[in-house]
Amino acid sequence: MSDNTDDNAQSQPIDAGISEPGEQAAEQAFSAGALHVDDPGELIVAVPAMVGFVPERSLLVAMLRNAPGPNGAPVIDAVARFDLYLDSDGDERLGSAAAYAEAVARICATDGSGEVLAVIVDDRALPPRPDPDQHQARASTHAGLIKAFARRLADQQVLLAGAWAVRTIQANEPWWSLLDTDHVGWLPDPAASLVTATHVFHGRAIRATRSQLTDLLTPDTELTTRVAAYLEQSVAAAHDRYTAAVRSGDPDAYHRQTLERVLCQISDIDSGTNPTVREFADLAVALRDRVVRDALFGLAVGEHADAAERLWLALSRAVSGTDRADAATLLVFSAYIRGDGVLAGIAVQAAHEADPNHSMALLLATCLTTGMRPETVRRLAHCGHDIAADLGIDLGPSTH
Image (tube, rainbow, N blue to C red):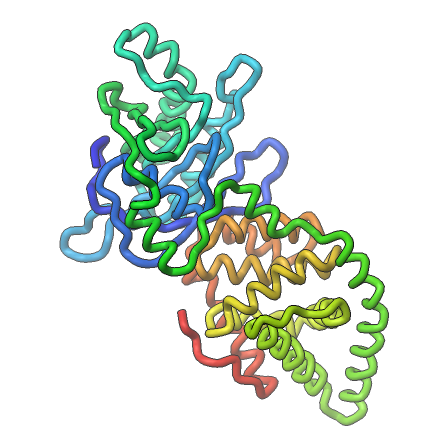
């Protein structure tokens, strides 16, 4: 790969956190396995697989680190995505470069990265022309942004090793360097990308737009209303079970029975049976028990991780308030652990909107925002296994 990069690149994605008004929020992604790209075109067509959807009007930044071993060739360790906003004059908003650089530098500091690559995907971008005057006029918006971005990164000891722009990610679309005006090319077929094929092989969906991801967590208002009508009955039933457990001298029996009920629901959804309205209400009440909820984090590293994630997603759409935040937080963790930081970031935002004070959602948002590696965060899953074991329940072996 030109623009001062090595031709061995391993792609990994991130999606992050809760931002204050005016902040630039980074969406990040992590993936497993050695995935290689050997030129800018290959890197660009690999982007949708790395972030889980085809980006539009976005700045994407790939963090590089040296791979272990004698060669120590740079690999792509994480990818962060930012929305591109233009003002009324068609220029990038004042301060955007500084905000992008600050977010990237924070992730690099956590991940030990000292070099990054940048890709701009923007249908408003115009490729260079042979005439220098026309090239300067047509490329000034993104070239200026990248120049300021590189300068801000350098202030924080991070090198921008390459930067390219493309209008859209499709076969035969032109791409051009934003650092070297003579470096241009054409995109290969995204469907033929090795990175894309690897992600699809591992069952990771690549969606046409980011909105398709956000739609997954849009509340089903009709279902939410129906579930809410059963919540009082579910609370009363849970109270009776807890009272009975206390009277029998075994308060943990309530936690154990409640956890078993949730595991049965996960088994049902794994076999294709969706929860009923009443079962959604029972699940929401079950997660109000912090012992049960914390134990369920352990499922993210086991053979039932996929089924559990589908249940957390379905429950997130079926309830509101803190109940929605509880379910969405389990979804955040599950997606985070398997490397889907984009979905994790969308889920953490849903949890924050449902309950701004949800402590676990805030903790995971911080982990995402700072670029903490999934292997570090997965310690929470091991704690979940321990909690379940203390209740006499084996969540099964860890598979990843």
